[in-house]
Length: 392
Length: 142
Image 1 (tube, each protein chain N blue to C red):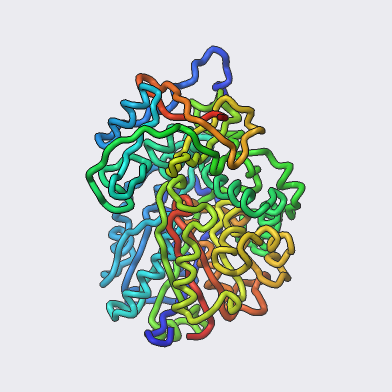
Image 2 (image 1 turned 30 degrees about the vertical axis):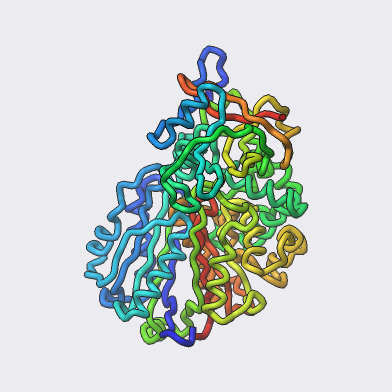
């Protein structure tokens, strides 16, 4: 990014994922911001822009489409740049991208990106409202759509084209759990390690997925501050520079995807590598949105981090696990950290930032000079790729 | 949902699609057990789902063409556990993406087939399922 002014993320905070029955989506927002402000020493003038996301989508409600207005007023700031935006899981990756452009244009020196999410229990009509939300009302939903079965279309096709096995999918879950056991904030911290056998013996949901192939629905939220370099350095000795970024919007409904094994991630990834002037081999780690076990496996391939069709073998090799050659989802992934509904697209960005800053605790990587963070919205519909690094 | 398996309760009706203006011919022909899709003369191609323009070239001069109803399973999943009340009695059921011989892909269930026998690339043919006063295209082994 040498041709433009460097932009970096200087401060980050995330709630521990859990169930917060006494808090609605807005209450979670306030808690996220309270925690963020308590962890970082900021003045109101340090936040010149604000991007937020509706927090009630996963519950089927969207009555907070103006949430940014309430938040900037409650924060006590009058921003020069603000919006409520939503692109599902890719919202927060795209927030970084919008913030970078606003900062490079000179509109603002800093933008607070914030998200909070509720997640309905799947047994209380929540799964139906979510299925309605992510499948075509007329041409998909009447066929009894169910989110795991929509994702499973990609898994089944990958197994068909490349010989990927359910056991290889299970390896993704095993790897993520090993990382979560090193992360005190993960919902499964203090629990048991997974094995391929445990995943395969968990109850079938939608083939090829069993229960442990699915992420854990929880609630939470996170915030981070994107800044110009001078601001970032004033706030943090080691900010996380945004070296590259890319986005691609491929389809809305899964049956409309031109290919299920080249689903748009490679396009956003290539933009990010080009902008950063870096190659996949320059990456030290990857944080990849993983609602289901298939996602990291396919996206490792699409991001050029392993050969096409070899994602299963990559996870089977153990390379993604703690101590492995190429760590993936070092926070435990949504599979074992927890999936915080509308805020879920925050967690992999937060971890990428922390690894670059060197504040990831017991799971801190020895080598974290550059990492790639991929998130998507919808049924792998729209994609955001970020490349973060220690120096501009 | 604990009582959905009770013999005394009638399962709720499965969803009936909303008919939009641009798709009226599609649903009208479905009532006659015909799979008829919008067709773009500029592209010489049928497309799915119905819309007011051809998504490949924006041509709005759309005609309608009956398809063979033959296709293959492009991908699928066997659903063992679903929260949808109207599908409880069908469990386990198959949610699939069907690739029609003429090219377009559509979502459907694979009916009249042991769920363990469904495979990618399996040959299927259209069959119509009543939904209220409508019919929707479904697929079964050819």
